Image 1 (cartoon, rainbow, N blue to C red):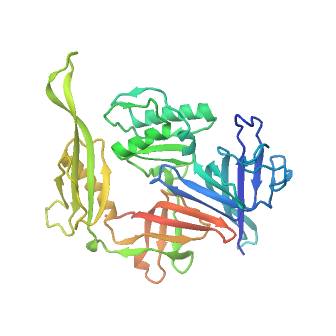
Image 2 (cartoon, rainbow, N blue to C red):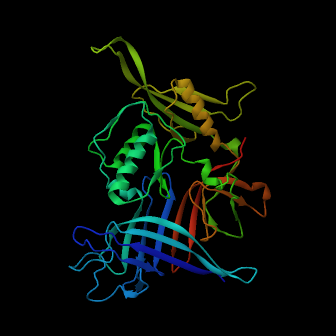
Image 3 (spheres, rainbow, N blue to C red):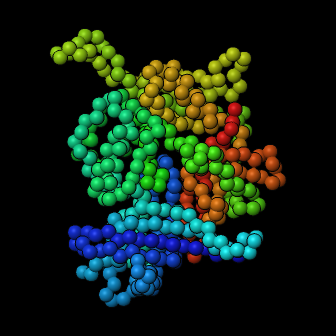
Length: 413
């Protein structure tokens, strides 16, 4: 028998009104809790709901109540609140069970790590949560103008250094790539998270935390996420129909029935002729955009895609070009390069296999970016390995669930 395990750890943070708040609350029960793991949203959010008639253990192991006339839960009386916006939260969940060898096993994983963003005033008590991005939303950037030759990773490092200094966090930046935007960026008057929003709007860079590591750029999946410390591949978790797939919204598609298109863009600097007063060459910003469409069955020697240049101000309607995506390629200097890069990325989604999402139990634990295997015992030809785009977690009195969304199939030629 599998028994659900819940552990919610809340570390109080001192505030101006209550500088001595330093209690650690350890809860082993919640009516419900939920969170998400995705690169599509700047901030992964969550929440938990707990009854007022509940006890917690503090950092000294002492059992203490949430109820009582002298207990202030969410800052709605003069006493120091037990829960307050900015408190650190960690949710761990999983199962206790007896394995085949007769041993008692506890299999848990960290489902969420972040901060309280809001404490409700009603009963049962509801706390809204945000991941580490919450800290960057509270981090003011210095008034610095970064030149067009500065890498995005350098700007991220400045954000993290400032945040670590203010909040005592231990955030890091993935520096394996060096992405050059090509345009100057001024961060004066902006919070760190606002800079990330600007990078997304202007250049299509997706920003997110994986654990304590901040990432931003065109690449949202890093090979290291599916490698062990010694560099060998991690064996993907397996999910099978009629076994650990509880329900699904999966569709099996054949690539011959698919039409895909993408709008690809970049902003380049080109010389216009002549010089400025200080002797520098005059330049202007030019936005390059193309619409790329994959062909179903290109003939011998034919390019497997077609593209056309999108003129300035032109609105591209969704017509018969199939599922539309948008890409940004900061290294593309011509429309032909844009089209070629868009094709290479778009072809990942041209495959015979599943797309959509499915629901499974609390184990095996999955995060966005993981590789997983889907098996069909009845139709084994439909077996395949996929990259996970997002995961929604939920737990509480109704048990543990993960809703896993697929992005694309791996090992497709």
